[in-house]
Amino acid sequence: MNAPLHSPRIAAHDIHPMFTARWSPRSFTDETLPEDELLTMLEAARWAPSASNHQPWRFAWGLRGDEGFDAILGGLLDFNAAWAAKAAALVAIASRSTVAGSEGAPEVANLWHGFDAGAAWSNLALQAHLSGYAAHAMGGFDHDRAAAALNLPKDHHLHAIVAIGRQGEAAVLPEKLRAREMPNARLPLAQIARRGTFA
Image (cartoon, rainbow, N blue to C red; front, side, top):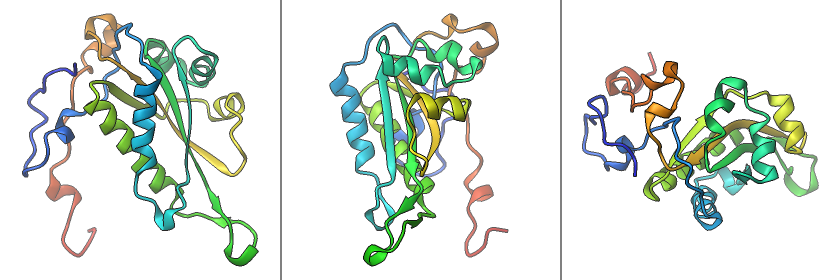
């Protein structure tokens, strides 16, 4: 089960508790993740909002011990690979950056592909949490190495690699990571949202 909340996770407005309860630990148990549980998380991602319903998100996944897992793990930078190797599953999240032009016209840029992929990641993360798992997205990967290992098409952009599993004890992490193994706070709403203006 996910760790109890610490004081930084207090909402200023009345929201569903899953939003403050979900966080991104780095410590995982040795427990495996059944494939159907992972597919449930990917199914939640599939139903994310999508601009013009283009659904640009794409996922490559592997369960610990299989070739897909090893391929994704090999794309991570050493700092992340050290702890992510214990995850039960790894998921690479990409999105298709182009869409078909109207009436047979050539492909054109999809300016919202990254925004939509982010929405899909959020759905995946929340479903993982609701299912009793932890999901931690990472930007610390070697893009070229990961793209080659996963056969990323040229019109796709790789956004993140996600480690998923049952949350473990902080004590199993390297000492420099143990102090960071807790939910963090967020900026005050008034600092990030203004009526009618950004500045």
